[in-house]
Length: 142
Image 1: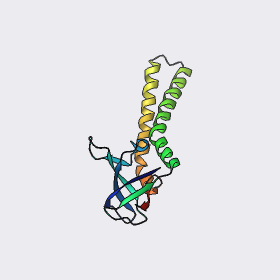
Image 2 (image 1 turned 45 degrees about the horizontal axis):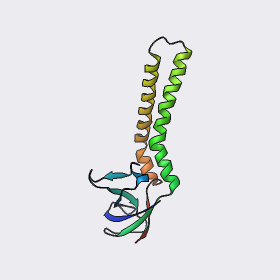
Image 3 (image 1 turned 90 degrees about the horizontal axis):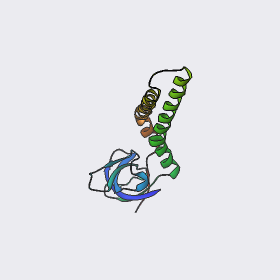
Image 4 (image 1 turned 135 degrees about the horizontal axis):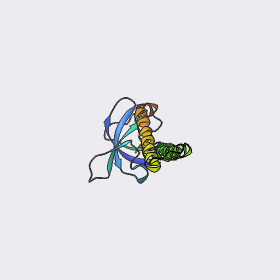
């Protein structure tokens, strides 16, 4: 997936910030910070190995597989935790002949598992950032 934008800030010798138009595939991946509610422009951290300068018009690329992997981490993992937490707790409570509000407790366990998945993602956020696996790379100055 390729996008174009302008470099607005150099963060360090490997990273820059660029402004670009919001793309439907990356609308909420977590790497973008919306500037305001009225604009479709995004500020994105990008890998600046080629040494682009502030004001340069650049093209960035991120492999589709990595975009899908990041989407899976952000959206599918919590959903799986919700479903598994609910289903497992339901079957365990049912197998021990629990006489209380089975569905309510199972639903609460599912929500708790979802919360745990978000806490796991938050705890490992810095590790994902440091790996630079999910950060777009500047491929050329336009």
